[in-house]
Image (cartoon, rainbow, N blue to C red; front, side, top):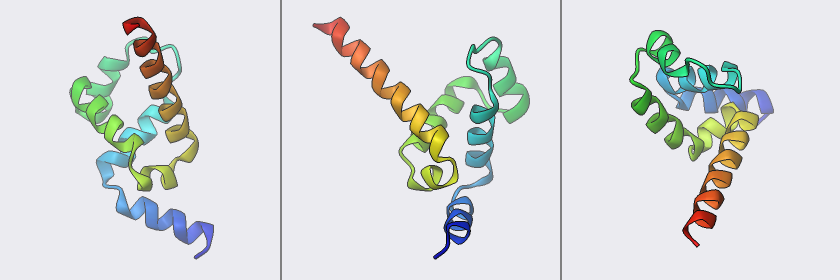
Length: 90
């Protein structure tokens, strides 16, 4: 299977909302600003639901195939937050 076919299969396995969440997250500038308002306006989702979907997508192999750099960055951030919380609990 070629890279293009493999990527097409990954994209096909993600629903439209999942692709929209990944696209939104990849385009959002790092300093968050009014992100919650933009989530409501652009995705018609409550921010809590958006973050639930995003957390699930971080572990989804299809999301990795669709946007590997974004998913890698999100995994790295999740691991950094977990390490920080662990240090605080010591």
